[in-house]
Structures are given as C-alpha cells and as structure tokens.
Image: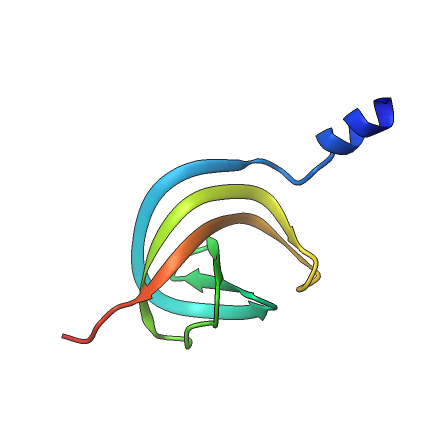
Length: 93
C-alpha cells in the first residue's frame, strides 16, 4: 500500500493553470515526437502539439499551464519552466 502512495506522490511536478497570451518570434524550436518545444524571445519554453514553426516565424501563443522543472524523456533534457500552449501563426499585414 505504501509503495502505491509513494509512486503516486512521486509523479511529475504539478501544472499550475493559467490563461496567458504571448506574441513573438520563434528563437528556437525542438521537435520531440508529437510535440514541439518552442522558445520565443526570452527564457521561457513552450510545449505544443504538432509540427514546429520555423525559427523567426511570428506566432501567437495561448498558454494554459506552467510546469516547473519539466523533464522531456524524448529530448533527454530538463527545462526550468515550460508552458503548455497552443500556437497560431501571425498573419502578415
């Protein structure tokens, strides 16, 4: 019984819900299976489903939650903070 409780408590860090919007150019994009990790201008990374946008593409991000100390097994990398988001390409004026 205690092992089950410990296993449940030892899961990934919790996601803190939010409803944020950001607009910016893609500085880095890392494909990871069905996901893409994207960094806009600034230190924060965003995780989204689907193909990665091109570097320098302008996107609108809607962030639904943040996770501290996030590990990506596919990338073999840890991120200090990741926002889970949807991305929309900005249309040219």
